[in-house]
Image (cartoon, rainbow, N blue to C red; front, side, top):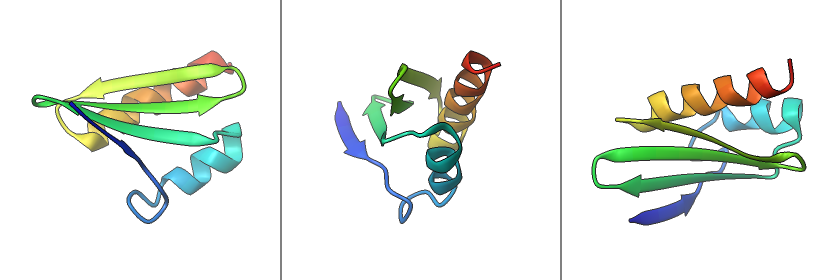
Length: 69
C-alpha cells in the first residue's frame, strides 16, 4: 500500500475542488490494482474507489457534491 498527497502539479483539476469545497488535503492511495482518492475538509473525509486514479477522482467528487446538496 502506498500513500501520496496529490497536489495541483500532479492532478490539475484539484485546484477547482479545493476552492469550491474548501478541501485542504487530497490523498492518493494505491493498494494492489485498486486506486483510492480521498478529499479532506472541515466536514470529514470523502472517498472514491476505482481501477485508475481518474475513475477514483470522479467518484470521490460525486460523493463530495452529493454531501453538500
